[in-house]
Image (tube, rainbow, N blue to C red):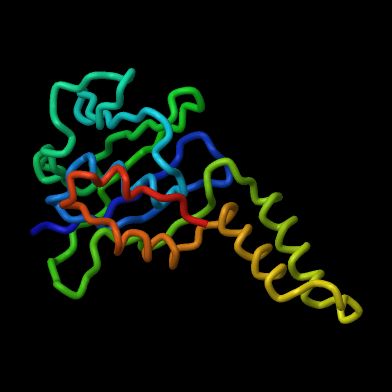
Length: 195
């Protein structure tokens, strides 16, 4: 099986929000949709589509677009991608979250390599660096305030967990990806918000 290293970058956002992922060539477009949902911290609430070589693909939702191909049966290897090839993924047509996806490399198959797997990334959609640092300063102020006798460890933990909605928590993303059963026909029910 061919293993792809791809970069998924949200277009038109600064600072950049991106993910570098490892996926198998046998990953269906439906599965890639759910992988992106998990890595971006979304819960599949909106319509989406992939645009590859001039054609649109996606998972049909009632009231949404029809696609001529079944996204559960079209796999990444079907496109014959080479390193440097690109395609797009659009999610939430109201917000126009357009992602550029680029094939960065092919890796040798190894049973020790986890797929799908988030190798690295930056930022979370809808969050600004100011939001993150503002919350981080708030958490640090509580931790270093020696005179604070009312704040519990649970409260500090809750505030730290709020940072996950603003900053990529790769460990949590990969834990969710490990539990994603790409062979299960009810894969859409497995998509959960990270954080």
